[in-house]
Image (cartoon, rainbow, N blue to C red; front, side, top):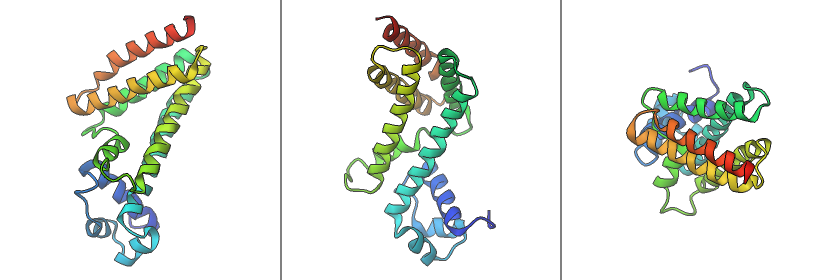
Length: 190
């Protein structure tokens, strides 16, 4: 870890701590200590904690969305196979030890009383990017209104993530996957 650039060490450390413990519970001094950087390095790179939170959310979002897209791409071009890749990857994520839920959803909840926090824009960008990923899947499945189907799928993905975090079991994907398949079938035949 020490060999990584200071900015990367700060961002990696902050992302892991914010995701596992919450934004408010983690102070910059702890991040500075664990990232093994000088205090001025954090402030020079990010300006302060709020901008660091926004950068951490952006990094997490990009990695998470790539993870889902890669899982779908490994399944090829068949929409049904790509759909299974999405749900299989979500289930694998839920099964990881200590699954904390979505960092973006947790941050949105934690920062709900701070509408001007710079992380709010990253939360919106993440939601739009996930919606676009799902809309692309909906288009390839032949949905008559891909935007509507994407919105329905997003509710199911969000619900499965929340259920997996609260119930501490990956079983949430089973019911959500079944409902999503029904929504895709209805959107393609309706």
